[in-house]
Image: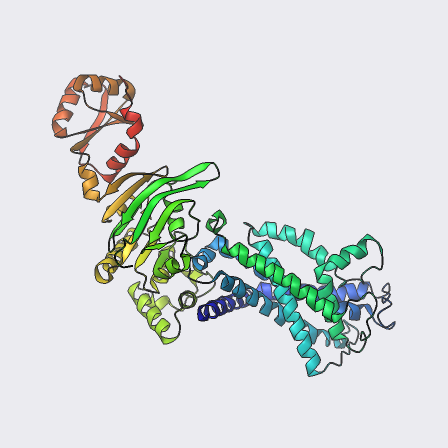
Length: 274
Length: 312
């Protein structure tokens, strides 16, 4: 058991140190979503109609706020797993695979590293985002949250971050090039975020509504939305899943991905020798 | 299991789809010896290496390292062996010391014990003054030294080295081999080396020669050379086929054709040279005499099938 913690911790630490030594990654992971938030917020300001479960005076940027936080978690978590492909190519991974380390610790190290980075960036955005209205780049957002609310947000973000890092792990593991990963990113992960209720509310009927309801990320966005505006969405607002549903769906999806990741990592195959 | 051989391979085969990379390999490596796996690229030695270090699954046959089955107890095997890969497994963005620290943690070392071990090894491989440098700033030779330090950090009793001399200049190569022999002599470490370099193979206590996944020879370098039994006469000429046929008929000796030259193994080769020159003064462009090398052994053993076929 000690061996599990020691190796998971050391791999986590490496992941974070590596990230911090790549300045461009730090800027890219936080910069793009902030720009998205400001530009979409300004562009869609007039055409946004709050869904019926939200207060009528809600501005688009306010609606979009949790969605961007989820985007940051998604992008940071997913991009952190690209390092699996780099580690494989650069040879570091084979050194880890031949070490007497439980395979679950290899997965745990990666998930913890990616998640910590994602949580750190998302929290930074949530704090900084509230100050952007002083620069005229965003409306005033008064969350009026207490310490306990922030703690809940942090816990939920952590759950979401682990889940998305695990998803990234499962996708990145069999890949031999980062180009392939970028392709998956644009045809699968970006649409997944677009259809999560982050950018626009879940449609009431039609094929789009089914697609969005089947999307696990929808529950991540809804959960965060509920926790960030606790006064606004107290009653079971129609069209917005309950917090319990959000937690269960996110945790179940995360567990599934994590188990798949351990399975992949445990298998000795020709993949390990690329 | 101290009585078991360091490595025992029994009937090991491996296929990638239709291609057979290893075919029914069996051999033992004794404790405390430097054992070489010699073969050209594609001979299967890297596949074997990867199976021994638990990266690839064992499909048919069995492999025991220090008495433990790699298929059954991979973690026990992993704990006891040190591995140095051909392509460095270092993290380029971390410093030398950070790389070693993470490696130590993966092998269950920590605290002052790990620190002492890192200091000791950095000294042994002559990298003490570069400990704080980021790996990407090191030369190929330095990376290899750190890689070796990495493999030895947990004091393994069995060290697996994959093509250790790749990218090393002759000086660094000598240093490496001095250190490898020191490990064997002072700590009784068993060392398995894969190589395609003949001068490196010469350094081994025993040598297994692989060709197309098959073991073609296994003995000490001296014994392998002695097995050729005599001198090696090589000659170059314009029409090797005609000349080879003629020499076989006239001198009744086996002649092996390698490219555009001919090789003849024979005791008292110097006499044969005189006879050959007198017999074919026009046809022979150049002729030379040498004591057999491992290359001769390799050519003899792997070319076997071709030149023993009845040509007459």
